[in-house]
Image 1: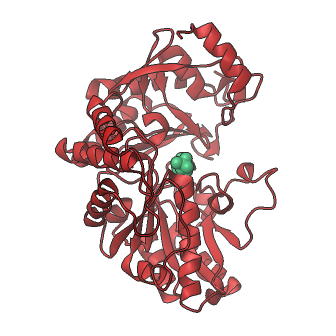
Image 2 (image 1 turned 180 degrees about the vertical axis):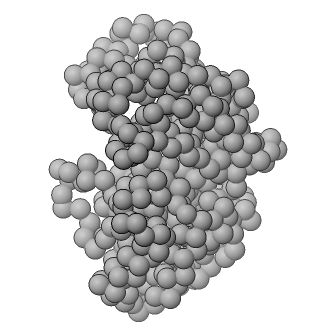
Image 3 (image 1 turned 90 degrees about the vertical axis):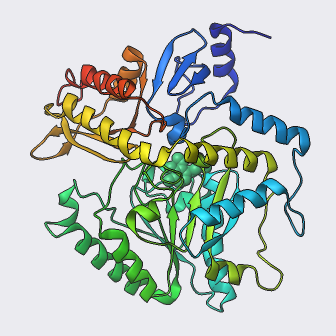
Length: 447
Ligand code: PLP
C-alpha cells in the first residue's frame, strides 16, 4: 500500500498521538529515508539533521550493515528471555564489551529498552541497594532543576521542569531538586563562584533531609534538554566527594552523553568522576533499534545479586537483536575513530557558529563539548535576559521550514547533537542556516 503525503497526513492527524504537538496542528514532516546526516521526506524534500534524530544518531542514518546484523540475528534467534538462568550470546557479548569500556568498577550491565526505563531501574536499584544493606530509610533522590530524566514516575519526578509534572500529580515523593550548574546564568549564584554555591547548597540540603534518608543523586553530566548546560570542571568531582562522605550513590544519566558524543565513551571519563551507576540508551544503537543499558558498580551489583537476586526484570532485558545491533554500532564507532571525530567536528562546528553568529546581539553564548552544542538566545547581552519566544514562530521551526536544517529549541537555546559523521561542509551549512534566520530575529523574538 503506497499512500501519498496528503493521505498520510490525514491518517497521522486522525490516529497518531505525537508528543508535544496539539491535535489541531496542521503541519506534518513525514520522513521517508536517510543517509549520513541527510533525510528526505515523502515529498522528496531534503533535510540536514543537526539533532541526530533525538540526540542519538551517532553513526548517521542509512547504515545498511546494521540492518544486515539485525536481519541475521532475527533469522537465527529473534528472542528468548534472559530471566533466571536463561541468557543469549549477543547480550553476553555486549555486556562484556560495555564492562570493558566503562571505568572500573562499573563491570555489571542491566539492559532496558530505552532511557526512561533505565532511570526507573537506576532509582529502584539505588533504593534496593541500601535496603539490602539494612538502610531502608534511604529513599530520597536528589536531582536538579532543568534536568530531564524521561517519562516514568521515578525519572519523571526527578525531572526538573514544572511543565513535565503539571497534571500528572501526585509525582513520586522523596525527590528534592537543587540548582543546576549553568555558569552563564550568573544571577543564579548571587555573585558567588557557581561551584562553591552549588556545593554549599548540596551540603545544606543533605543536612536538611538527613544523609541517612538519601539513596542517590541523579544527574546528567551535561544537561541536554535543559539547554546543553556545561558545568564547571570542578563541579562533578566536588559533588562526588560530598556524596561519598555521606554514603549517597551517584547516578549519571548518560542517555545523551555516552557513546562518543563528548569525544569519550562516557561523560564520566570527560569529567574524571566515576559514578556508581551510569544509565545509557540512545547512542548505544545510534537509534537503529531501541535499547538501553545500565552500567553498575561491583559494590552495587554485589548487594543486588545477593540471596534471590535482583527482583526486577522485564520482557525485553537483553534482547538478542537489539544487543547484536548495539555491538555492531560500537564496532563502527571504534573502527571509524568517532571519539576523536566528535571532538574535531564539534570544535569545527563550534568555530563555524562563532564565525557566523558571534556578532549577533541576540546570541548570548555559544557552548559545546564534542558534538553537543548550544546557542543561547538573549534579548540583551548585558542583562542576559532570555529571548522571548513565540510558539507559532520559534526560530528552530523557521530555520527548518526555510532551509531544511533541523535544530531544536531548548529553554531559549538552539541545541544541536549531530551525527558524529557530519562533514565540514554540512557544519558550514548549519551555521549559515542559523545566521540567515537569527540575523533578522528582533530582540522581541519576532522573526
Ligand atoms: N535521560 C535523558 C538525559 C534524556 O535526554 C532522555 C531523552 O531524551 C531520557 C532520559 C529518556 O530516554 P528515552 O526517551 O529513551 O526514554
